[in-house]
Length: 361
Ligand code: ATP
Image (cartoon, helix red, strand yellow):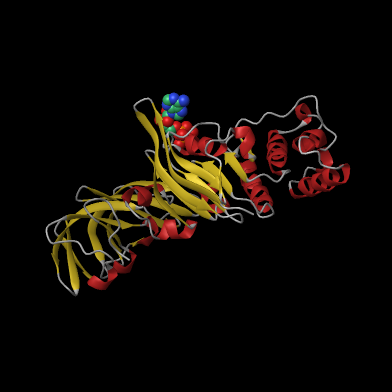
């Protein structure tokens, strides 16, 4: 099977640049999630891959076959939209096998594929029903099943779970993941939900303002964000990002100052060393903050301003000399107005430079 190649894909709507110079390759055994805030260009990118939107610049190909000049119909991709439409006068079984009619599949092939899909998506008991007799979750599963029943060059999903409530979304993520594993075709999913991207994607492309900020495996993007945007976007609760400055940098050590509090890091923790005098951003996850006065980056005598119960854990918002520091702790032993001494181990710090790009390894 062929890889999906996207090269320099760009889309202008008049003077507005919706997508700018997006390049990536998606392998046949791979699910790539396009993730980013509303309006960052995810759907436009997907529509250019599908041929529903012509690219202003750039190319799309499957293996060695360029398809940029082809219409959507001739690209042979399967696309499931956020607003699914089932044929109301056809049963679930008829809806599911509908795409196979155009491929002149034999009755045996249709039967076999239908039974596989119905099995994985747990639709076996509703095959003879009509769409109006289905729950929302069942309708969505039929829509996904109808998309994946044939074998196109690629599968494209636009927010496949967005219309479902939280409980159904949880269930569907598992079903979709299971079915994606059987497809063996490049698959691209657009989502603004990072949990969806983390659980369904083999890789994630994080987009902002039409550009791809970082592409990587979910855990890598979480653990090694490329810049402050990705650091702030990926992870719930959000990473703490606090501005400081570089006091000195030599071969062995880098000294930083954060509102007078000084920390010294080993130079070999850095991929790119900051210069003395420049501003830097220190990033650390709320989970890495502890109430101790141990060595590390210390926030002495911080003021608890808000506590948010998140189930088994509490997110504790603190103010330290005007800087907001969030700490995630098990249980709920804090109250507004408490004074606390916090610290973060130096190994848990991620440093970003003046331009927001990652400096540490
Ligand atoms: P969302 O998550 O809200 O669906 P998105 O990341 O999918 O957002 P797109 O739908 O790709 O974003 O839109 C990217 C930008 O391009 C947006 O600012 C949008 O307003 C703009 N845009 C999209 N389609 C058109 C169009 N046909 N004409 C003009 N501008 C458009």
